[in-house]
Image (tube, rainbow, N blue to C red; front, side, top):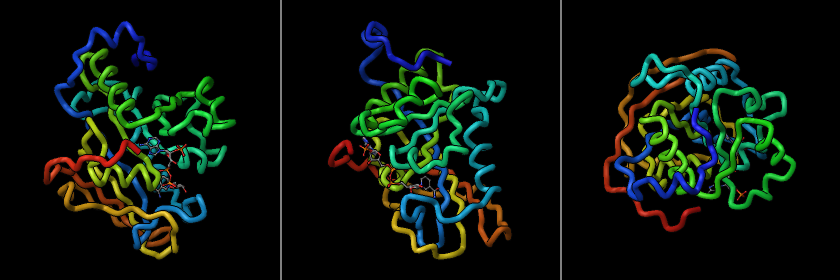
Length: 230
Ligand SMILES: NC(=O)c1ccc[n+]([C@@H]2O[C@H](COP(=O)([O-])OP(=O)(O)OC[C@H]3O[C@@H](n4cnc5c(N)ncnc54)[C@H](OP(=O)(O)O)[C@@H]3O)[C@@H](O)[C@H]2O)c1
């Protein structure tokens, strides 16, 4: 895996315009009303879905099947990072690199220590993330790693509105729990930005009725120009 801090001298070597967008996949679990969280937490616990999340985000890039599974990137908003219980903090001794979006690293508070001890890195904007990922892809002679977006609401909705500069969603993994949890954080999927092509559907009955759906996505109109970076 490439060094994750971009040395300034390397940046000057690189082309300023990248040939292609960085591809990413979104992994989300919603209730039947598009709710994803209530009072800062996910109000359901479906171990099989958590296992699926781990499997999806640690798998090797299918375009390079022989590649080892280390090096995948998982992006999340600062509030999602704070919502993860200590027992589930997966970012020490990790193959995946977690990137936390925040407008100010000071907002990470005590969590900032994780930046030194774990596979975790803050980023101040999507532009910083796409620059970093492009640099890593360039360093490794291609995109051998996979990029995933794991929430929360603000981050998902930016992805669904096609508002992430230099990055394009190629796959959507969405688990739906068939119950209304009266969530206060919701996702809104914009069908003006992406088309969905169902690839895989897995119904489940326990602990309650839910299903996992995997869509291949394609942009269906010119990218929406973001009003602001945040
Ligand atoms: N059901 C699911 O699958 C699922 C998955 C993940 C999370 N969740 C839930 O979602 C909830 C959190 O969602 P949320 O919408 O409140 O918050 P969020 O998207 O996790 O994080 C929002 C924060 O991320 C930072 N951020 C986002 N976009 C940014 C940008 N372009 N530039 C710089 N910083 C940016 C900002 O941090 P600063 O305020 O520090 O600037 C912002 O306040 C949690 O309750 C979590 O449990 C659910």
